[in-house]
Length: 232
Image (tube, rainbow, N blue to C red; front, side, top):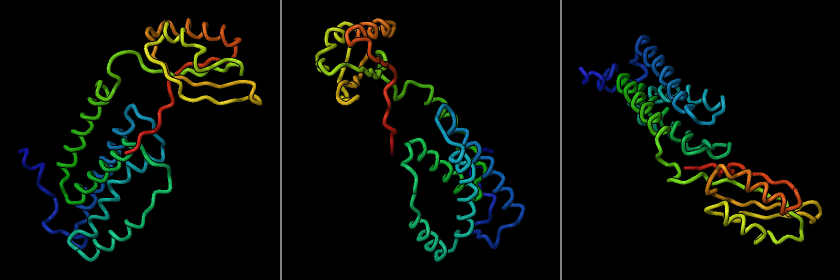
């Protein structure tokens, strides 16, 4: 029974000229449905844009059409390869999950183009379950301790930002590091950013109060660090 999942609904060595309307529509509907599933998998607990989600949903049926046209035709396949080699992405580099979602959509499109509808559905379900499980697992997270935070402090120019808060950091944090410093307001103020890990997250207000009494009640800001977008 399960072996039927790995059988194709298309004839062996089928080409676009030998496809029936019913078979083409069946593969197209499955490609669109699985494309939407791929988009939903990508959207799960991840920041996204509507344009990219729509592209993911349409990518399997586009790949299906390309493979259906070149299947069994070496000359057409080489020509299509040359066309795709000219494609350049004009946008910013995608994250690792963006690229993974694109490869998933392409794999689904390849499977439906070859007629392996059951395999494409089973593969999508497996990836969906694995994605949900891994996203909600501690895999890749911080190993123990509090999350690091970004501390931004404005201070007058006569303060030594390298050592001004050493005693406070020693008291309230387990780790601290100076990230960068810059001058502002015609050089009369410094804007300093530290990366800190609090010993007790509940003492964040105490740390901020201690800093602002020392820097003349100038701006103090504490929050999550700005993460560099990961690329693959």
